[in-house]
Length: 206
Image (cartoon, rainbow, N blue to C red; front, top):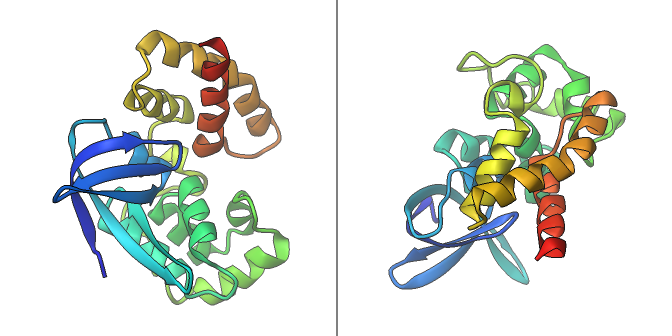
């Protein structure tokens, strides 16, 4: 298994980064937390998990080893594949997921796109003895409670993609109503989705 990749960042996209390793560009599907810390041309180290399918080899990247470990543990639950596991980590930090499972917080899991009420109940049962107790000071709820807010993460990601600070400011302002609607409905703004919307507004203005 490829446990990590290390090298200069060759490219960053809304959900993928390309890391140059020994002259080879490794495409890595990343969580928003991992992408937010990347800058094109700078050195980076990503914890990774290789998912092998009959027709594909996909490398998933994470901000740290803990995120990768939780990603792999989540997939031991029935019905959870790599895409859903990554979506869960896009919404919640590893410790927030541990806390949600250990306390039976169904609402926290249904905040993840693709998980309904029944699915959340099943996951709480299956994961209770697998994820363990929180190891940090996580609080119930979304990743934004323990990490920079969605606007900071989005702004950092846009600058990392090569946009000027002014352009990033304008793009964040353009998608703020969308994020506020999500919050008003009791949800959590998804940085990956907002990044796609922000990139669309930037492409229209160029």
